Structures are given as structure tokens and as C-alpha cells.
Amino acid sequence: MDASDAITALAALAQPTRLDAFRLLVKHEPDGLAAGEIARLLEVPHNTMSTHLAQLQRAGLVTTERQSRSIIYRADLVGLRRVISFMLKDCCAGHPDLCVPLIADLRPCCLSREETHA
Image 1: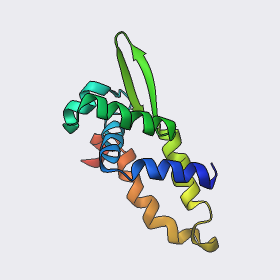
Image 2: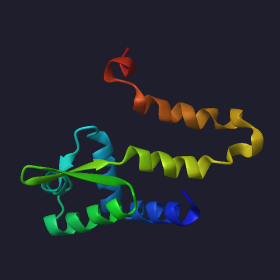
Image 3: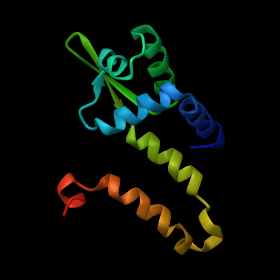
Image 4: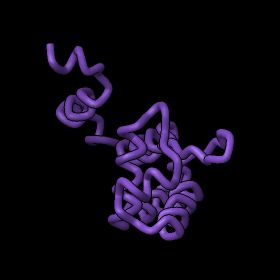
């Protein structure tokens, strides 16, 4: 990932509806959601949501898969990882211990529900 790709991804997320849609898709990984369901849950017109999802896809943050008559959208977690990695690439001027709190904040999202409630 280069600076241009990172700017494209971050710009796509800099709009409230797209940010909400992306966070919703992350929440629904690995199953994803149909565009109509995303629009319904976020209370956004279908055609507007399609435009937002297309921009997230162009930014490398969303993937699609056709299932019967529906297109299922999924968060591209590899794309998200690339953006985060780009942002942290030269983290803390050679003091990785300074990044520990950041990494600790990210870890709970990766635990199963059983692990987080144990």
C-alpha cells in the first residue's frame, strides 16, 4: 500500500454513511450482508447505499459475491489490515513498546464471544 491507496481508503471512510456501512460489515464478518439489508439497517435509500458500497469497494475495503439474486457485501479485512499497517509502519521511532496499548485495544475485537465474557 502506498500513500495514495491509504488516502483513497481513508477518504472513503470519511463519510458517515460509508463509515457506518463498513463498521456494520465488519460486525457481520464472515457472512456479510446484502446491499438491501445494509440499506434497511442504516435507514438509507437503496440507490444511495449502492453508491456508497461501490466507493468502499473501489477503495479496497469491501468485496462482493453474488449469491443467487443477491450481491453479498463483506468487509475486506485484508484491505483494512493494509491501511492500519500503512499507518503504523514506522510506529514509535523504534520503540515498539509504545505501540503496545494500541495493539491491546485492537485485540478484544479478535476474541470469540466466549473469551470476552470469561
